[in-house]
Image 1 (cartoon, rainbow, N blue to C red):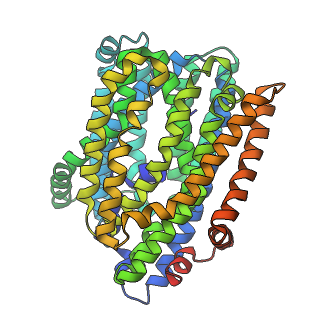
Image 2 (cartoon, rainbow, N blue to C red; image 1 turned 180 degrees about the vertical axis):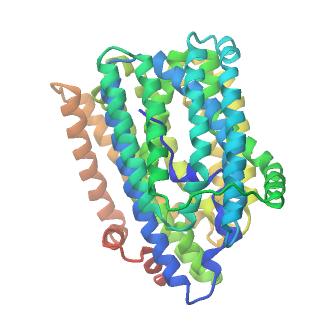
Image 3 (cartoon, rainbow, N blue to C red; image 1 turned 90 degrees about the horizontal axis):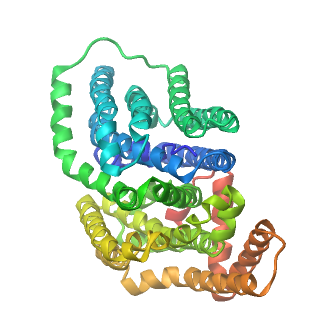
Length: 523
């Protein structure tokens, strides 16, 4: 399963930097409806890409899982620690320095391209040379060979990054979606063909490289822009200075995103790292597919009403209700059938990922709501608050890992979810200072979905323990249907208005209507 890029990966470690500094939505009133429509359309294409690429990746790995071992996938996951570290610290920040401007010039984009390529080449070489040291540190045989081969992906990322960001600034999400979907499908097909022939770890490595190379080729083929051979010394120096200012937040971002995989790999080895990685990847897939269609319009919606305190409060509350109604049952339901779903999808050798995914899925609820808070911080120019919250969460996760790890691999996810008990109330309190939405109103907004999902979880577990099923597939299917029925039934009782209004908003999104404007208008 390819860890393909999400929209947030493309935008960089601080997606709000583009919006807040360029602030297209803060332009003239005449331009706002056009830009807002483009943002909503972009959200649709992002949602299509996420749904398609995640479904394809899961389908590919469901096949390849029969031919590869958890240790093989663990080596791939460890290699991506280095790849994404360089991507976040180096490649993303170079392009972000230029793309955050209101109207970047062709010379600035060209300078960004060559500087990114140079730094990506250095990072690729560093990945290649560090494989032996990483293999000894992690006590992971064959890691050196895997990192040496996959180091070329860093170079491909450097070649693609400026073109990606330029298309994002032009709202060309359709082109990016096509590239992502086709690249994932073709790379996956190559990986499946090789895995079926018994190439195992080699098949996984070639799948990753092929997906990246094909995506790069499609991106260049579909882009009308070609960099020249001119660079601006002034832009290059400005970019390097920007990278220095972004270094602390980028380092923290890398640590927060990768500390769990690193700790698991270091203390429990590649096999458990592979099992943890598949559970984490499934949680991420759920998070992207469930939340992207709505979260894609959170920023323009909040930005449009930010000057009106009462509307900002009402729209913020409606956003929380909407996201909770859609996302909470998805994560809770997935947690309730985690064991069956993983056994059906990937085979018994991955069954140990079941309890890990069950815990991570519950944490996805708080991750989604945390993203809403982060967006609010960006809109109100309080990005530093997000940085502090990430710092607290990362520090708590690392501290909790050491006492909890003695319980064994089945509890690997617990230390990375428990910190939400501190950071979630903290972020809700900070949002209340910006919107006037009290903490009790925040809880009231999510409580119907949480209560209905809890009853759904109980119903699924009751059926699971009292009914004998012929196989895991029938058990997962029946429990999923039952859970959905219970959730909707309870929601209609406790919050009928939420159900009716949500389905109306979803229809607006499906018909490409300006959803953010509808939310803002009824705020």
